[in-house]
Image (cartoon, rainbow, N blue to C red; front, side):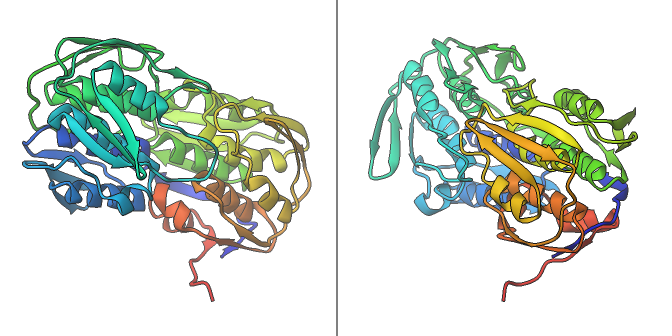
Length: 416
Protein backbone atom coordinates (compact mmCIF):
# COMPACT_ATOMS: atom_id res chain seq x y z
CA UNK A 1 0.00 0.00 0.00
CA UNK A 2 1.64 3.24 -1.16
CA UNK A 3 0.48 6.80 -0.46
CA UNK A 4 2.23 8.75 -3.18
CA UNK A 5 3.38 12.32 -3.64
CA UNK A 6 6.34 12.35 -1.21
CA UNK A 7 9.79 13.17 -2.66
CA UNK A 8 12.35 10.53 -1.61
CA UNK A 9 15.27 11.97 0.37
CA UNK A 10 18.24 10.47 2.17
CA UNK A 11 20.70 7.61 1.78
CA UNK A 12 20.16 3.98 0.79
CA UNK A 13 22.72 1.17 0.87
CA UNK A 14 22.82 -0.99 -2.26
CA UNK A 15 22.72 -4.73 -1.55
CA UNK A 16 24.73 -7.49 -3.21
CA UNK A 17 23.71 -8.37 -6.78
CA UNK A 18 21.05 -11.06 -7.14
CA UNK A 19 22.24 -11.97 -10.63
CA UNK A 20 25.82 -12.40 -9.37
CA UNK A 21 25.16 -14.28 -6.12
CA UNK A 22 23.05 -17.11 -7.61
CA UNK A 23 25.74 -18.43 -10.05
CA UNK A 24 28.41 -17.87 -7.36
CA UNK A 25 26.37 -20.02 -4.95
CA UNK A 26 26.10 -22.67 -7.67
CA UNK A 27 29.89 -22.51 -8.22
CA UNK A 28 30.49 -23.67 -4.63
CA UNK A 29 29.43 -27.14 -5.89
CA UNK A 30 32.70 -27.32 -7.85
CA UNK A 31 34.78 -28.02 -4.70
CA UNK A 32 34.47 -30.22 -1.61
CA UNK A 33 36.11 -27.47 0.48
CA UNK A 34 34.20 -24.70 2.35
CA UNK A 35 33.44 -21.40 0.60
CA UNK A 36 32.38 -18.12 2.23
CA UNK A 37 30.38 -15.51 0.29
CA UNK A 38 29.95 -12.00 1.71
CA UNK A 39 27.36 -9.27 0.93
CA UNK A 40 24.66 -11.86 0.21
CA UNK A 41 21.24 -10.18 -0.09
CA UNK A 42 18.23 -11.54 1.82
CA UNK A 43 16.04 -12.54 -1.14
CA UNK A 44 13.62 -15.38 -1.74
CA UNK A 45 15.69 -16.44 -4.80
CA UNK A 46 18.81 -16.71 -2.60
CA UNK A 47 16.83 -18.76 -0.07
CA UNK A 48 15.63 -21.06 -2.90
CA UNK A 49 19.19 -21.52 -4.15
CA UNK A 50 20.29 -22.36 -0.61
CA UNK A 51 17.54 -25.01 -0.44
CA UNK A 52 18.62 -26.40 -3.84
CA UNK A 53 22.26 -26.70 -2.69
CA UNK A 54 21.06 -28.41 0.51
CA UNK A 55 18.92 -30.86 -1.50
CA UNK A 56 22.05 -31.78 -3.50
CA UNK A 57 23.90 -32.62 -0.28
CA UNK A 58 25.75 -29.38 0.51
CA UNK A 59 25.88 -27.85 3.98
CA UNK A 60 24.58 -24.28 3.79
CA UNK A 61 24.66 -21.72 6.61
CA UNK A 62 23.53 -18.07 6.57
CA UNK A 63 24.94 -15.59 9.11
CA UNK A 64 23.63 -12.08 8.35
CA UNK A 65 24.96 -11.23 4.90
CA UNK A 66 27.60 -14.02 5.04
CA UNK A 67 26.96 -17.43 3.55
CA UNK A 68 29.07 -20.55 4.14
CA UNK A 69 28.70 -23.53 1.81
CA UNK A 70 30.52 -26.84 1.87
CA UNK A 71 29.58 -29.35 -0.83
CA UNK A 72 31.63 -32.30 0.46
CA UNK A 73 29.47 -35.08 -0.97
CA UNK A 74 26.83 -34.16 -3.52
CA UNK A 75 24.41 -35.91 -5.84
CA UNK A 76 23.80 -34.96 -9.46
CA UNK A 77 19.99 -34.79 -9.40
CA UNK A 78 18.27 -31.49 -8.55
CA UNK A 79 14.91 -31.25 -6.75
CA UNK A 80 12.17 -30.84 -9.38
CA UNK A 81 9.81 -28.66 -7.32
CA UNK A 82 12.56 -26.29 -6.13
CA UNK A 83 14.24 -25.79 -9.52
CA UNK A 84 11.12 -25.22 -11.59
CA UNK A 85 10.26 -22.20 -9.39
CA UNK A 86 13.34 -20.21 -10.36
CA UNK A 87 15.04 -19.76 -13.70
CA UNK A 88 18.41 -18.95 -12.14
CA UNK A 89 18.58 -22.47 -10.70
CA UNK A 90 19.57 -23.87 -14.12
CA UNK A 91 23.10 -22.66 -13.31
CA UNK A 92 23.66 -25.67 -11.03
CA UNK A 93 23.95 -27.78 -14.18
CA UNK A 94 27.44 -26.59 -15.22
CA UNK A 95 29.03 -27.20 -11.79
CA UNK A 96 27.38 -30.65 -11.43
CA UNK A 97 28.55 -31.66 -14.90
CA UNK A 98 32.04 -30.29 -14.23
CA UNK A 99 32.50 -32.08 -10.91
CA UNK A 100 30.43 -35.27 -11.26
CA UNK A 101 30.37 -35.59 -15.08
CA UNK A 102 26.58 -35.95 -14.80
CA UNK A 103 23.62 -33.70 -14.01
CA UNK A 104 19.83 -34.08 -13.98
CA UNK A 105 17.99 -30.79 -13.62
CA UNK A 106 14.33 -29.93 -14.20
CA UNK A 107 13.50 -27.29 -16.80
CA UNK A 108 13.46 -23.97 -14.89
CA UNK A 109 10.73 -21.41 -14.21
CA UNK A 110 10.91 -17.71 -13.22
CA UNK A 111 9.26 -14.53 -14.50
CA UNK A 112 6.88 -14.77 -17.45
CA UNK A 113 8.61 -12.26 -19.75
CA UNK A 114 8.96 -14.26 -22.95
CA UNK A 115 10.91 -17.23 -24.25
CA UNK A 116 14.17 -17.82 -22.44
CA UNK A 117 15.25 -21.20 -23.77
CA UNK A 118 18.32 -23.00 -22.44
CA UNK A 119 19.38 -24.30 -25.87
CA UNK A 120 22.64 -22.28 -25.76
CA UNK A 121 23.54 -23.82 -22.37
CA UNK A 122 23.00 -27.31 -23.80
CA UNK A 123 24.89 -26.47 -27.00
CA UNK A 124 27.88 -25.43 -24.83
CA UNK A 125 27.73 -28.63 -22.74
CA UNK A 126 27.56 -30.77 -25.90
CA UNK A 127 30.61 -28.97 -27.30
CA UNK A 128 32.50 -29.96 -24.13
CA UNK A 129 31.54 -33.60 -24.70
CA UNK A 130 28.30 -34.11 -22.78
CA UNK A 131 25.39 -36.16 -24.10
CA UNK A 132 22.07 -34.36 -23.52
CA UNK A 133 18.53 -35.78 -23.35
CA UNK A 134 15.24 -34.24 -22.17
CA UNK A 135 12.65 -36.55 -20.60
CA UNK A 136 9.70 -35.95 -18.28
CA UNK A 137 10.54 -32.27 -17.70
CA UNK A 138 14.16 -33.06 -16.79
CA UNK A 139 17.36 -32.28 -18.68
CA UNK A 140 19.90 -35.11 -18.37
CA UNK A 141 23.57 -34.44 -19.14
CA UNK A 142 26.32 -37.10 -18.99
CA UNK A 143 29.96 -37.17 -20.02
CA UNK A 144 32.73 -39.77 -19.61
CA UNK A 145 35.16 -36.86 -19.89
CA UNK A 146 34.86 -33.14 -20.60
CA UNK A 147 37.32 -31.69 -23.10
CA UNK A 148 37.97 -28.04 -23.94
CA UNK A 149 36.38 -26.72 -27.13
CA UNK A 150 35.90 -23.58 -29.20
CA UNK A 151 32.25 -22.55 -29.04
CA UNK A 152 29.98 -19.67 -30.05
CA UNK A 153 27.26 -18.67 -27.56
CA UNK A 154 25.47 -15.93 -29.55
CA UNK A 155 21.70 -16.26 -29.80
CA UNK A 156 18.70 -14.53 -31.33
CA UNK A 157 18.75 -11.75 -28.71
CA UNK A 158 22.53 -11.61 -28.38
CA UNK A 159 24.67 -13.45 -25.86
CA UNK A 160 23.35 -15.43 -22.89
CA UNK A 161 24.38 -14.41 -19.37
CA UNK A 162 23.33 -17.59 -17.56
CA UNK A 163 24.51 -19.71 -20.51
CA UNK A 164 27.96 -18.10 -20.36
CA UNK A 165 28.09 -18.68 -16.58
CA UNK A 166 26.94 -22.29 -16.89
CA UNK A 167 29.39 -23.27 -19.63
CA UNK A 168 32.23 -21.44 -17.86
CA UNK A 169 31.56 -23.44 -14.67
CA UNK A 170 31.58 -26.75 -16.55
CA UNK A 171 34.73 -25.80 -18.50
CA UNK A 172 36.92 -24.93 -15.46
CA UNK A 173 37.26 -28.66 -14.67
CA UNK A 174 37.42 -29.86 -18.31
CA UNK A 175 40.66 -31.11 -19.90
CA UNK A 176 42.38 -28.53 -22.11
CA UNK A 177 41.37 -25.06 -23.24
CA UNK A 178 37.83 -23.76 -23.87
CA UNK A 179 37.29 -20.57 -25.87
CA UNK A 180 33.82 -18.99 -25.63
CA UNK A 181 33.04 -16.54 -28.43
CA UNK A 182 30.11 -14.10 -28.05
CA UNK A 183 30.40 -14.52 -24.27
CA UNK A 184 28.18 -12.27 -22.13
CA UNK A 185 30.12 -9.22 -20.84
CA UNK A 186 27.93 -8.39 -17.81
CA UNK A 187 29.62 -7.44 -14.49
CA UNK A 188 27.90 -10.47 -12.92
CA UNK A 189 29.81 -12.77 -15.32
CA UNK A 190 33.08 -11.01 -14.34
CA UNK A 191 32.21 -11.45 -10.64
CA UNK A 192 31.67 -15.20 -11.16
CA UNK A 193 34.98 -15.49 -13.06
CA UNK A 194 36.76 -13.68 -10.19
CA UNK A 195 35.27 -16.13 -7.69
CA UNK A 196 36.25 -19.14 -9.84
CA UNK A 197 39.81 -17.79 -10.18
CA UNK A 198 40.03 -17.35 -6.41
CA UNK A 199 39.13 -21.09 -6.19
CA UNK A 200 42.07 -21.92 -8.47
CA UNK A 201 40.38 -21.79 -11.89
CA UNK A 202 42.13 -20.22 -14.90
CA UNK A 203 39.58 -17.92 -16.59
CA UNK A 204 40.81 -15.05 -18.78
CA UNK A 205 38.92 -12.41 -20.76
CA UNK A 206 35.81 -12.18 -18.55
CA UNK A 207 33.96 -8.95 -19.41
CA UNK A 208 34.93 -9.23 -23.09
CA UNK A 209 33.19 -11.20 -25.90
CA UNK A 210 36.02 -13.80 -25.96
CA UNK A 211 36.75 -15.84 -22.84
CA UNK A 212 39.54 -18.40 -22.51
CA UNK A 213 39.23 -21.09 -19.85
CA UNK A 214 42.14 -23.44 -19.18
CA UNK A 215 40.87 -26.49 -17.32
CA UNK A 216 42.38 -27.52 -13.97
CA UNK A 217 42.15 -30.85 -12.11
CA UNK A 218 40.71 -29.54 -8.83
CA UNK A 219 39.35 -26.38 -7.23
CA UNK A 220 39.70 -25.34 -3.59
CA UNK A 221 37.53 -23.30 -1.21
CA UNK A 222 37.58 -19.49 -1.32
CA UNK A 223 36.11 -16.33 0.23
CA UNK A 224 34.44 -13.72 -1.98
CA UNK A 225 32.42 -10.48 -1.70
CA UNK A 226 29.59 -10.08 -4.21
CA UNK A 227 29.40 -6.90 -6.33
CA UNK A 228 26.62 -4.37 -5.57
CA UNK A 229 23.35 -4.79 -7.46
CA UNK A 230 23.37 -2.39 -10.43
CA UNK A 231 19.66 -2.98 -11.12
CA UNK A 232 18.71 -2.13 -7.54
CA UNK A 233 20.88 1.02 -7.77
CA UNK A 234 19.19 2.03 -11.05
CA UNK A 235 15.74 1.43 -9.52
CA UNK A 236 16.39 3.77 -6.56
CA UNK A 237 17.99 6.36 -8.86
CA UNK A 238 14.86 6.39 -11.06
CA UNK A 239 12.60 6.51 -7.97
CA UNK A 240 14.49 9.62 -6.77
CA UNK A 241 13.98 11.32 -10.15
CA UNK A 242 10.33 10.23 -10.45
CA UNK A 243 9.42 11.68 -7.03
CA UNK A 244 11.53 14.85 -7.53
CA UNK A 245 13.65 13.90 -4.51
CA UNK A 246 17.34 13.54 -3.78
CA UNK A 247 18.81 10.15 -2.93
CA UNK A 248 22.40 9.06 -2.28
CA UNK A 249 23.13 5.46 -3.31
CA UNK A 250 25.81 4.08 -0.98
CA UNK A 251 28.09 1.43 -2.48
CA UNK A 252 26.76 1.78 -6.05
CA UNK A 253 29.22 1.06 -8.88
CA UNK A 254 28.99 3.87 -11.45
CA UNK A 255 31.23 1.84 -13.81
CA UNK A 256 28.44 -0.80 -14.02
CA UNK A 257 25.75 1.82 -14.74
CA UNK A 258 27.10 3.85 -17.68
CA UNK A 259 24.09 3.32 -20.00
CA UNK A 260 21.49 4.02 -17.28
CA UNK A 261 23.27 7.12 -15.95
CA UNK A 262 23.74 8.41 -19.49
CA UNK A 263 19.98 8.19 -20.17
CA UNK A 264 19.11 9.74 -16.79
CA UNK A 265 21.40 12.70 -17.50
CA UNK A 266 19.91 13.04 -20.99
CA UNK A 267 16.46 13.12 -19.33
CA UNK A 268 17.50 16.06 -17.11
CA UNK A 269 18.52 14.15 -13.97
CA UNK A 270 21.66 15.22 -12.13
CA UNK A 271 23.97 12.39 -11.03
CA UNK A 272 27.00 13.23 -8.87
CA UNK A 273 29.69 10.72 -7.97
CA UNK A 274 31.39 10.87 -4.55
CA UNK A 275 33.74 7.92 -4.14
CA UNK A 276 31.58 4.80 -3.98
CA UNK A 277 28.36 6.81 -3.64
CA UNK A 278 26.06 8.38 -6.26
CA UNK A 279 23.67 11.24 -5.51
CA UNK A 280 20.67 11.56 -7.81
CA UNK A 281 18.24 14.49 -8.15
CA UNK A 282 16.33 16.31 -10.87
CA UNK A 283 18.09 19.10 -12.69
CA UNK A 284 15.15 21.25 -13.81
CA UNK A 285 12.36 19.85 -16.01
CA UNK A 286 12.52 16.27 -17.21
CA UNK A 287 13.04 15.69 -20.95
CA UNK A 288 11.80 12.71 -22.99
CA UNK A 289 14.44 10.22 -24.19
CA UNK A 290 14.33 7.22 -26.53
CA UNK A 291 15.71 3.93 -25.18
CA UNK A 292 16.59 0.57 -26.75
CA UNK A 293 17.45 -2.33 -24.46
CA UNK A 294 20.59 -4.23 -25.46
CA UNK A 295 23.06 -6.70 -23.94
CA UNK A 296 25.66 -5.13 -21.62
CA UNK A 297 27.10 -2.50 -21.91
CA UNK A 298 23.84 -1.33 -23.54
CA UNK A 299 20.73 -0.22 -21.65
CA UNK A 300 19.60 -3.16 -19.44
CA UNK A 301 16.27 -4.85 -20.10
CA UNK A 302 15.93 -5.10 -16.29
CA UNK A 303 15.62 -1.27 -16.06
CA UNK A 304 13.22 -0.82 -18.99
CA UNK A 305 9.99 -0.90 -16.93
CA UNK A 306 11.29 1.54 -14.29
CA UNK A 307 12.48 3.99 -16.97
CA UNK A 308 9.07 3.78 -18.66
CA UNK A 309 7.50 5.17 -15.47
CA UNK A 310 9.88 8.15 -15.52
CA UNK A 311 9.01 8.82 -19.18
CA UNK A 312 5.28 8.58 -18.38
CA UNK A 313 5.85 11.49 -15.94
CA UNK A 314 7.86 13.49 -18.53
CA UNK A 315 6.17 15.98 -20.88
CA UNK A 316 6.56 14.84 -24.51
CA UNK A 317 6.86 11.56 -26.43
CA UNK A 318 9.50 8.92 -25.85
CA UNK A 319 9.95 5.53 -27.54
CA UNK A 320 11.19 2.53 -25.57
CA UNK A 321 12.23 -0.48 -27.68
CA UNK A 322 12.72 -3.92 -26.10
CA UNK A 323 15.30 -6.05 -27.93
CA UNK A 324 15.97 -8.75 -25.30
CA UNK A 325 12.62 -10.25 -24.20
CA UNK A 326 9.58 -10.09 -26.48
CA UNK A 327 6.94 -10.23 -23.71
CA UNK A 328 8.38 -7.58 -21.44
CA UNK A 329 5.61 -4.98 -21.69
CA UNK A 330 3.15 -6.61 -19.29
CA UNK A 331 3.46 -3.60 -16.96
CA UNK A 332 2.01 -1.28 -19.62
CA UNK A 333 -1.64 -2.22 -18.98
CA UNK A 334 -1.11 -1.78 -15.22
CA UNK A 335 0.54 1.65 -15.68
CA UNK A 336 -2.51 2.62 -17.79
CA UNK A 337 -4.68 1.98 -14.71
CA UNK A 338 -2.69 4.73 -12.97
CA UNK A 339 -3.29 7.10 -15.89
CA UNK A 340 -0.20 6.56 -18.08
CA UNK A 341 -0.68 6.97 -21.85
CA UNK A 342 1.40 4.21 -23.50
CA UNK A 343 0.79 2.45 -26.82
CA UNK A 344 2.62 -0.72 -27.90
CA UNK A 345 3.77 -0.97 -31.53
CA UNK A 346 5.62 -4.26 -32.09
CA UNK A 347 8.79 -4.28 -29.97
CA UNK A 348 8.34 -0.59 -29.03
CA UNK A 349 6.27 1.29 -26.45
CA UNK A 350 5.31 4.85 -27.38
CA UNK A 351 4.98 6.87 -24.17
CA UNK A 352 2.99 10.12 -24.29
CA UNK A 353 4.19 11.57 -21.02
CA UNK A 354 3.28 14.44 -18.74
CA UNK A 355 -0.14 13.37 -17.46
CA UNK A 356 -0.34 13.14 -13.66
CA UNK A 357 -0.65 9.59 -12.31
CA UNK A 358 -3.32 8.75 -9.73
CA UNK A 359 -3.34 5.79 -7.34
CA UNK A 360 -5.22 2.59 -8.19
CA UNK A 361 -5.04 -1.16 -7.47
CA UNK A 362 -2.46 -2.83 -9.77
CA UNK A 363 -1.06 -6.34 -10.24
CA UNK A 364 2.65 -7.17 -10.58
CA UNK A 365 3.48 -9.63 -13.39
CA UNK A 366 7.25 -10.03 -12.87
CA UNK A 367 10.15 -8.79 -10.77
CA UNK A 368 11.09 -5.57 -12.59
CA UNK A 369 7.46 -4.73 -13.46
CA UNK A 370 6.75 -4.83 -9.70
CA UNK A 371 9.52 -2.29 -9.07
CA UNK A 372 8.11 -0.05 -11.82
CA UNK A 373 4.63 -0.16 -10.26
CA UNK A 374 6.09 0.78 -6.86
CA UNK A 375 7.90 3.79 -8.44
CA UNK A 376 4.65 4.79 -10.19
CA UNK A 377 2.78 4.52 -6.88
CA UNK A 378 5.39 6.69 -5.14
CA UNK A 379 4.96 9.39 -7.83
CA UNK A 380 1.15 9.14 -8.12
CA UNK A 381 -1.48 11.14 -6.21
CA UNK A 382 -3.51 9.07 -3.78
CA UNK A 383 -3.11 5.44 -2.77
CA UNK A 384 -1.75 2.64 -4.96
CA UNK A 385 -2.19 -0.99 -4.00
CA UNK A 386 0.37 -3.34 -5.58
CA UNK A 387 -0.60 -7.02 -5.47
CA UNK A 388 1.68 -10.07 -5.84
CA UNK A 389 4.65 -8.40 -4.14
CA UNK A 390 6.34 -11.81 -3.76
CA UNK A 391 7.94 -10.90 -7.11
CA UNK A 392 9.69 -7.96 -5.40
CA UNK A 393 11.10 -10.19 -2.66
CA UNK A 394 12.85 -12.27 -5.34
CA UNK A 395 15.15 -9.39 -6.32
CA UNK A 396 14.96 -6.44 -3.89
CA UNK A 397 16.19 -6.80 -0.32
CA UNK A 398 13.81 -5.09 2.14
CA UNK A 399 12.51 -2.68 -0.53
CA UNK A 400 9.66 -1.31 1.61
CA UNK A 401 11.99 -0.76 4.60
CA UNK A 402 14.58 1.01 2.45
CA UNK A 403 11.92 3.24 0.86
CA UNK A 404 10.48 4.12 4.29
CA UNK A 405 13.99 5.25 5.32
CA UNK A 406 13.81 7.66 2.36
CA UNK A 407 10.45 9.04 3.53
CA UNK A 408 8.06 6.94 1.44
CA UNK A 409 4.64 6.14 2.88
CA UNK A 410 4.63 2.43 2.09
CA UNK A 411 3.31 -0.55 4.08
CA UNK A 412 2.74 -4.24 3.51
CA UNK A 413 -0.72 -5.62 4.15
CA UNK A 414 -2.15 -9.12 3.99
CA UNK A 415 -4.56 -9.57 1.08
CA UNK A 416 -8.10 -9.79 2.41
